[in-house]
Amino acid sequence: MNEIIRKTQAGVTNGSLDPQEWSAFRDLAHLMLDEAIDGIANVRARPVWQPIPDEVRAAVRSDEPREATDLAEVYREFSEHVAPYATGNVHPGFMGWVHGGGTAVGMVAEMLAAGLNANLGGRDHMPIEIERQIVEWMRGLFGFPQGASGIFVTGTSMANLMAVLVARTNALGALARQHGIGGDGALLTAYASKAAHGCISRAMDIAGFGTDALRQIDIDADHRIDVAALRARIACDREVGFMPFLVTASAGTVDIGAIDDLKAIAELCREEGIWFHVDGAFGALAILSPELAPLLDGIAFADSIALDFHKWGQVPYDAGLLLVRDGERHRQAFAQPAAYLSREARGLAAGAVWPCDLGPDLSRGFRALKTWFTLKTFGTIRLGEVIARSCALARYLETRVLAEPRLELLAPVNLNIVCFRYRADDAVNREVVADIQESGIAAPSSTILDGKFAIRAAIVNHRTEESDIDALVAAVIKFGMQRTGGVIEVEAPPLATQ
Ligand SMILES: *Cc1c(COP(=O)(O)O)cnc(C)c1O
Image (cartoon, rainbow, N blue to C red; front, side):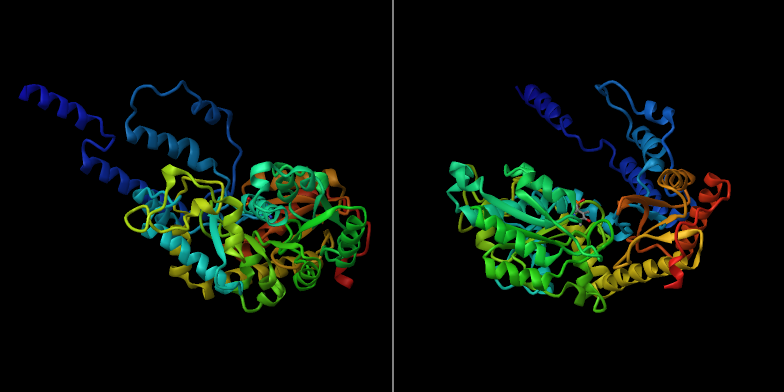
């Protein structure tokens, strides 16, 4: 009998996935940490990005790994096949899209979070208190009242979708969650500028309204929503029986970093009784810079704000946040009774409102920890300075472009984004962007402005310096000349004469 128990116990013990040899694991883990730190410390020694060789793609294709592989071997595969071929946004030469650079601090915080393996869907534990503390800091920064609520999500795409759902429940009442959006729902219309991020239109689709229900309002020369046109469109929609329910303003458009007139939109939404949401994906954190914060004037009147810590906040991916002025309305859009999730006054099941009452996720990771470490170790003053500095670097790039006859500036520089091109046609510039990316020198992206292909440099990474801007300019000129055989098509006088 004792023999059987001993055997059973042995069997159970062997079921654990913990290392058999903790000391060997510890050595390897320390090596991994050292190499991960080296990867950040020596990032300049690497190309920003490099094309993935076919052999590398092929090397990771395999059958389902039914048998165990040594950790050291799996790590070797990671080091050889994955790490060298990442996006490159850790590198100071990365200026594509709007990608944050991450920090070494954020990296180790992410590791600590993984060690706790906390589930932040609910219950009473300190990780949730950390998330609440960050929401509280953001509430203060954006001037939201007591009773505001917030929740970490993957990113602003999700936060914008959730804002649409909160605004929907606000407009139709909580019963719409039971009966569906129905006939009234079909009449709801939302508004954003033509320069708004595509995820807003997608949110309307996913929420069941369809993208046609999003009215895309014209922009002015500075790419800000035309508030008079917005007002007129709302009136026109009301006239024919639609029910305007949501305006999403952009605080930092993705193409050129324009910030809508938040004050005027707030005023309009107040008069009209319409939910006022701000997509502040990267731009909202400009609030941390005393120099830039005035650009966000009016954001305190928003009903909700979506923002990302993983862009200008330099927190490793992913870390988005939705902040809602009226926490009760936020809860009404998502909370759901379920016996297996019942809340208690004491014990582990205490601590309502739970985060799962504030969004679609039940199980949730501890995104707040890397954000907490980042905000605390650097301090919001320093993070604000980093943000202001990337705007200064964008102005430096603007100056370089204006001073260089072979280059052409394509949009005003508002924040940290510069859209320009080599003086040649779209096809040449498209090749130039790919040439630069493949060279490993820098990684700009592209956009289309007024029908013209633009090279787009978004300065987000805290590591980027003037020399990185110089390297980008030199690369554009070099590849532009190569692609055109040195011929410059001067279609217009250089903007430098302005
Ligand atoms: C990046 C961005 C988004 C999308 O945010 P994700 O975090 O990528 O989901 C939305 N709006 C704007 C203005 C953005 O810059």
